[in-house]
Length: 181
Image (tube, rainbow, N blue to C red):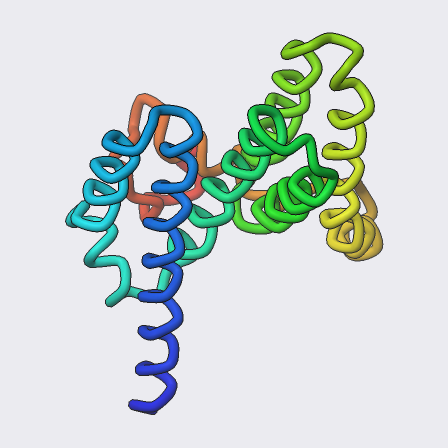
């Protein structure tokens, strides 16, 4: 359907605009005005990002979620100390875990950075961030346990994908026979 394609394309373009905005806001906090403008321009003109509006792919969603998580955490630590920023960071990180199998490790890393930043001052925020992020993932993990009979946090193909790209026969293609694995 042409209308469906148009709607998806507009949503993806909107996500691209949101990404540029988040990069600008993050760089504004971390580096300053001139560098923020440069970072936003680079994000807006990056050829792969420009092209991604034309292709339906999860990267359009998860790159925005990743940058939003970092933005809200940086804003929380550097500017606001607002629980709203911490909650938004947790929600973005929790949603990100549905898209990327390595995201639980990133969530733990971000919590560790919060904790190491000021030791006990950020112990409670780090715990809240972790609880919110993993609470988002809990329904899917429970579903996986009911279906597979074991705990599968996000996806079950991570090891296979790692093997496909990193073995003596690796071609970057998963089309060779499973017997080779």
